[in-house]
Image (cartoon, helix red, strand yellow):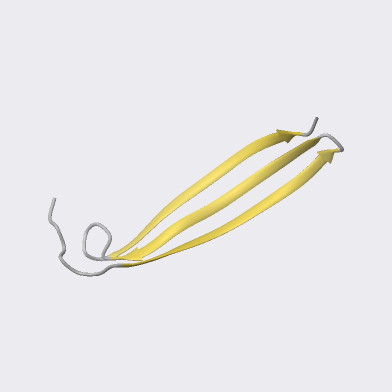
Length: 58
């Protein structure tokens, strides 16, 4: 692994949405990414992430 002795620039982008299935159950979708320059290989990097789940309200 090579260490780049310089400042890198990073940003986070994301979208979170909740879908109401019924009054006690919600489905959520989280799509996000870290966008950066010179994080790992010395070029542009995009690290995506997706999360899906259920929330139950008591």
